[in-house]
Length: 224
Image (tube, rainbow, N blue to C red; front, side, top):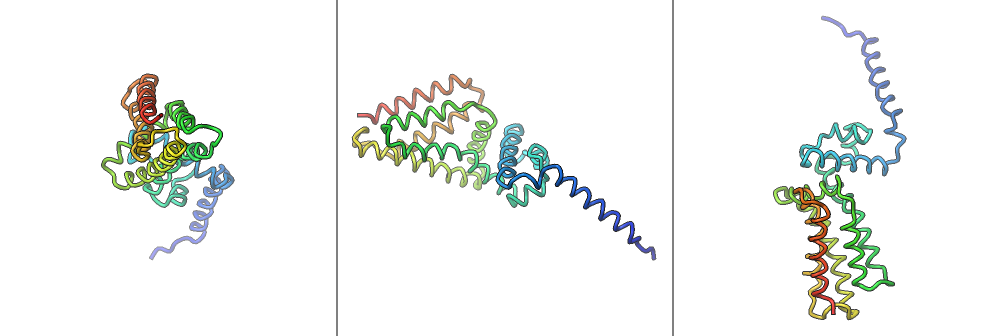
């Protein structure tokens, strides 16, 4: 029977430790957890936009973009689905923050607050994030997990918009017969449609112009 060489085994162990040490020295350990998480989510958005769907976004390529290892992605997000869910929340985070700010801007009229939100959505530079949002919208039609996550985010967006519109009705700025929930869902749909038109190849200025005219017409319907 052939015996294993203990010294050879120890040498292999030292090599594995050395490789792990090199990976740590590359910056994986030094980066704060929140920054590492954001870097991975950004890399996932970029890779998905390049691949055309979330399923084709390579975890190895995401790790390379983010400057980490594939096991690190699993440690932070547990699974690909966990990564997708986190990316949905992350990519719509700024819009939700803007909505929260708009609700509290008492110095502005309710019409001005809605227009400020529309300016923000329409003024965003179209790029990987908008492609990613459009892909999420398309995949949510056939993927229940993605649909549930996207729907949850849009429920929150709808809730904030509905709150703004209800405030405008109470303040006498908007017509008393206005249905806040219906108008809020119409406004919520504009942001998703904007990114989908971009994905389909419609020129950005034209797409934004069409949607802005629809927004202005919708707003005119509820103003006194």
